Image (tube, rainbow, N blue to C red; front, top):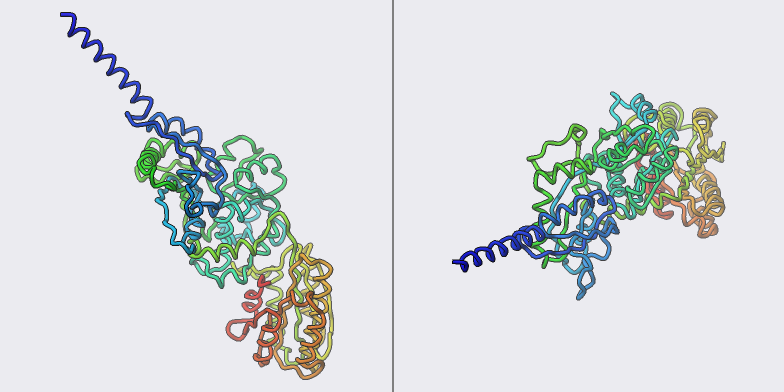
Length: 529
């Protein structure tokens, strides 16, 4: 009679052991550790990973060194990746790199886990000022660029060379600057208008997590932060700021990040599936939302009140990596800023009297801040920029150079364009020769400062140097002149062939003001150097 009792007791012990084992391994499966290459922004999910391991038996070990393009992934041929998964703010740049690869690399399985748009956090003073200047009080990227250019807003942004958050912010601003309403094309970044915007950056970091930490330590360093909505909400909730930042969703659109989890090692697909299922479960989505302030991807989870603001126009990411890289290269190192120098050679021959000179003055005033259109705000003169205006006829009539520090400097240049007399002749190539001597001196004095020449005329050369003599003189100026392109603006009856040749010979290009307006022509060439 005791044998059944003993057998029953042994069975109970085995069942108990099985239950304990199951509890420790997430349902009876083998305990697995996956190595994850993660974006630094995702450090805030680490507190949840213990629950993931308890529920699934899968342990995630996150290494927060992922860059925007996920360098080193996939590994070289014949090598195995050091990581099983990657968890990124966005995989857009990585997938574009795979798309351009010569070896036909396989796109890894990817699942969106949560979402957050790239937005702007403003101090109360900065927000009040921008709303007062913005049409209908609806702040756009163009408004931020305008305020950065005139020195009234200083901002922080992660370095787009490494950070996907910084890269998404830069793409968003550049897309708004292009004004096409669609993904950036090569022609949209060849003449980018982000110089004025960039002049307002006073704070940066390799990743946005470090950026928010730096701002919390030195809030006086900036009036605005450009980062994910989630990061700004987390910063506000941290209690580290004297006053919370006002979060603004730019009216001209935002880039949305979806924080995808990527399977780098196909051999771990089963474990990957467990992790994805757990992360997408309604309970986990709610907890992620509560802890990280990111928007849930699950349709079964209602966003919290702070996350119900519409993202409006979700801006598209470029479809080629070369476009993104060109944009990032043009933006350069955000730590080292230097204003450009532009030499404007303006035709003041008698044929410019009347409507033509009025159009020139209006175009110049627009660049000085009078143009309140979106494209005008991106194309305007900015603080730190060095500007030279040369009025010419049969000879140089007037020449003046300023480094823009205040509106008074811009008003000085406006007076030069608005006043002064005219001349009966047009010494086109003599004027360009004078422009190159100014520009070459500027290059020698400050090699790090980009310099360009803008030549505007409505006529043909009828005195002074010939084109051939100009080219000879240009050649004698050496490498300092070679670094300076000329952008010619054809207006009225100007000799289009001659202007095209001059632009091509100097690395610039010609813009025909007759196709739109002189104002649009000046906008088109702003930032093309």
